[in-house]
Image (spheres, rainbow over the protein chains, first blue to last red):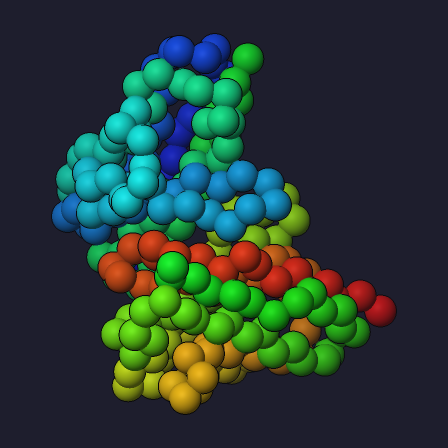
Length: 106
Length: 116
């Protein structure tokens, strides 16, 4: 079974700063990786699909990169509303989510 | 607009079953599959399984094999997820999501509480 490891577990940054979140797969998953944003009480929101493609309506400050086993979600300039837990998900095999990274805005 | 609307919250006793519905609108229901994902309190997102709305083919996560059933009703554009032999650790919010590769549209979630 493919395991996705996300880091850091928590990231605390100020508005305007850059956030870099990592997702590492235990084996190559090509670019079959998506990123989701999860806020309390709301459904998850697709941000990035196939490693680097922004979903419809997602602000340009969100970007994804990587292939194989190492992937990154970057939020170029944090806004207060970006406070959330971010999950990566692979679909190389049957879907599996990483453990999540919490972004806190100071 | 494309949306998935789920049924309301449920409370069940341990050992009982629950069936959650997910009604699609705004797109051709048979074009895409539906996955079910849950979020237990303090836990992350957990994929439960997938069903093709067109063929009815399904695949369940090993953890739920034998306890979960996913079905669709093409005539109403509705997907269903039934979970049996409920335990307290099945208390969670259950989501359906449209599968286009990634999960691009999500239902609002259905809270299922298992308590004696």
